[in-house]
Image 1: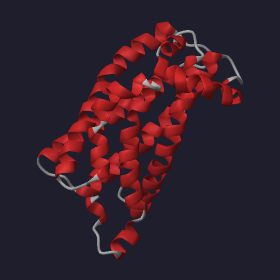
Image 2: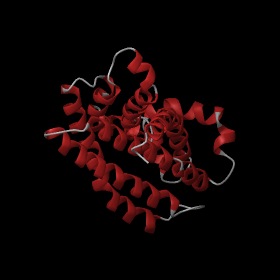
Image 3: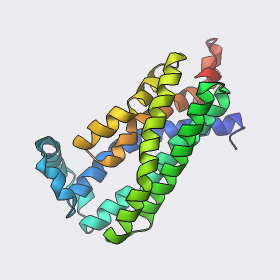
Image 4: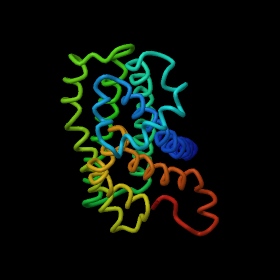
Length: 224
């Protein structure tokens, strides 16, 4: 599937749009969490309260259609296609670049982490439906933590390598993975820490999707 140019372009387009979808989803998921018993603790932060309180009033119909746990878990399930989209696009980009040396190892580390992160998200949200089961959620979270850390570290490492090789904005976004893991949860949901990664591969995916136009300008899309 990844060897077909048309498939690569389709994956690229999906990665681009799913990055924007994730940006919106992340805030809905955060607001949904703020209405759960555990998530109300996040509102102790004035920074979180400043945007979440008015936003939850505006978007009340999107947050009040079921119990707080059901709404939270439902929006959480929608992270899976976001993760799958940037993971598939990462495989496409890696295939097109034909990396060597340190970049080859950076890709191996990062792709392993992304696949593990997809599995973790699926287990965390798709094994629960109407109520948060802490007895299930806590072990899944602990098992997922290594993949979360590996995703952030691997993305930053890959970003540094690609930045040195002239990839530009997508590489710069990848280098923000570790700082984002610290700063983003101070404002919004934990899931949103992957947004720099999603947009990095969304941009690369958009470049791939527009390969014919890029080639017409005399550029080399495979090096994107």
